[in-house]
Amino acid sequence: MDNLKEGLIESVLERMASVLNANSYVELSRALGVESKTIYNWRQKGEINFGLIKLFELFHDVNLNWLLSGEGFKNLTPKKYAYLQSEYERLSKDYSSLEKRYLNLQQLHDQSFENFLEKIKERDVKIETLRNKIREVVDLFFSFIRQAVDVKAFRENLIVLLKEISEISSVDFENEIRLIKELKDEDFVVVPVLHSKDDKCESVPTTKKKKVQKAKDKD
View 1: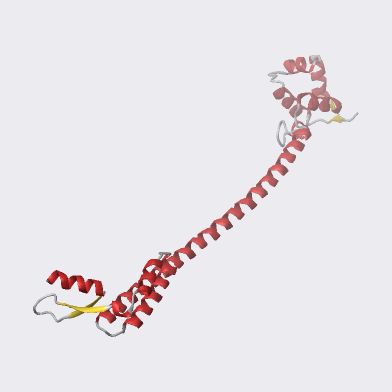
View 2: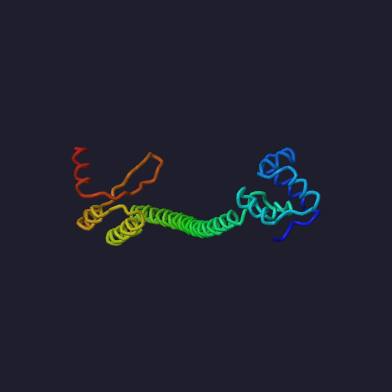
């Protein structure tokens, strides 16, 4: 068998002693199950049977490279190294899988946020459109009050505007539109309204029923 040559024997014996918690060569010999003179002979000859080193590695679960050179991890045996290598590969796969999931979630988050911003923009456009339609309704009423449009045009334009507002706001104006359609042109009349003595007379639309009721109230 090959022997461990001089120059290494002292350091190898010291590392053996550290593993066995031996504070002297006498304690080391007892722990190894050999006589004290055997340790002495190893040191004197500067050599030790390599087979004993291999047995020490196997029985005490130490790293052979560390035992011979002092380099590497003390207890990292080939079996442990193989286990750690397999664990490293497994964790690497798990990390890759988690990284892919994170990237997918990040992409979904970005898309959701973009969709949210797009909905906000659409809402703002709807609000602005609704405001404009309400202004058109107000302008239409004022035009009718000033008799700038006739009853037919007023009726048609009002129905169109109510339908457009209903589509934008999801508010149902079906009953109002039906009522406007059922009213006859002569049901729309204009009566003067005087706010004060100095004000000019303005006209507002009303119906025949309201006009008749107002005449009765005066009587």
